[in-house]
Image (tube, rainbow, N blue to C red; front, side, top):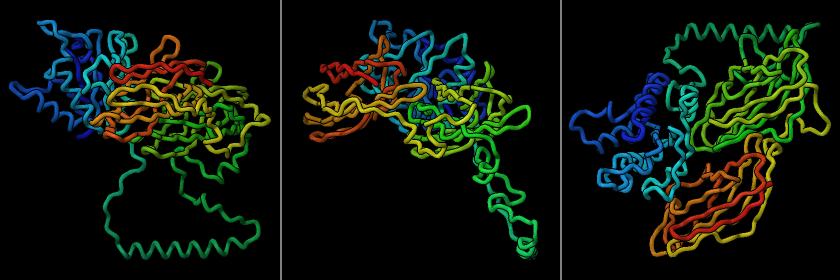
Amino acid sequence: MTGGAFISYRREDAAGFAGRLCDSLERQLPTEPIFRDVDGLSPGQDFVAAIEARLRQCRVCLAVIGRDWLNARDAEGRRRLDQPDDFVRLELTAALARPEVLVVPVLVEGATMPPADALPQEIRALARRQAVSLRDDTWDSDVARLVRSFGPGVGEPRRLAPPRLPFRVDWRIAAGVVGLMVLALVIGALRSGEPGTDAAPADSAPGTEPAPGVESAAAAASSGGRELAIPAVSQVGSRGLIYTLMSARLEPGGSSDTLRLGIALENETNGGANFWDDTFRLVVDGNVLAPNSHLNVLVHGHATSEGTVTFSVPSGTKRGVLRTTILDTAGEIPMDFSGRAAGTPAPSASRSARAIVASISTEARPLVTHPAMSATLTGVGTRRFANVLRVDLGLRIAATGPGAVSTGDLTLRLVVGEDVLAPTRFPIGGIIESGTTLRTTAEFEVPTNATRAVLRATAGEARSEVPLTLR
């Protein structure tokens, strides 16, 4: 089993929340192992060895952080996190060192994410992980959202097709089947020349159906209806997942019409992502409609897939809103059902035509310099989605001292209003050898109405702030 979850917590800080989370996960993931030290350790068992063994069984490590997690102290007044043998520190150090383990900070009691410079070096990368908050009044839905963030590999597997079963060929039956197929082809060829008989399209053979969520080109062309306008901002993106509304078609039918949406999922992450109906909802006249397309496929890392999402819409509906949810963020794309507006892109437009990208600056600007490392901002750009404005920073990080440095030694924060944001994507734990330079990027997600921000960079004692104008 390689799909379970490991719950890391501090007993004096959040033992009750950890127990409640464990119970909730066991209900939602009944086939997966959920490890919590108070349950899983036998008397006299070596704690460190047990942690390593459990992490080999688990794909997810949940760091439960309460109000006293960061500054919890022992009887002598020393901060626990500063002690090399602190259990929480050992757990997170081991989890962060395993690239196959997804580490998720889980905030309870209204706690906030601790800054990187307040953490020991071994677990400083935790500050760059996207956190999930669990609240008492929305506990069940928050846990469900947390489970969805685990992605494929945890919980019930979703297969694209039933597995093939071994079988033996009876050649007498096979020969009979081949004979019938040849006879059918001969009869079909003779009938194709008869008056009033049309040949069936190649993609509509009797007894076959298109894959769930995928519509054949011939069916789309003959279904009638009208093309709908695609808004200028027709993408929803977050944390390496980008959904693009490629086309929209409304087909009439009695008391309800069929809305067919061509949607592409671009997965920029290393893991797989579900491309399924559950991601989408249509809001019409205050009612929230679920799709009926049965779309459910897995898109592997660094790959793109296109599918069709369909809704039944009451006839006569004038407008609606397509809502797309990625983890804890949702984007809304307005839909006009009256037909194609002048000047809107054709449904066959590429995904790149949907991206609204702006280059803010290509001028290199020094960020921080100290004896071991220097960092330079080489460029700033933005990409506008319906739910967020993504800020892309080009970086050049050099190891200037006698030894190697880690990308984790550079802390970046983007200040937007009163919010201090950590990067949503940044290479964590990368090693830069002495005398070499790494060119990389950092991504931040800010509110769509943000126009100004301040980039804060810290490396050791070196600090800087760079104002940015966003568009």
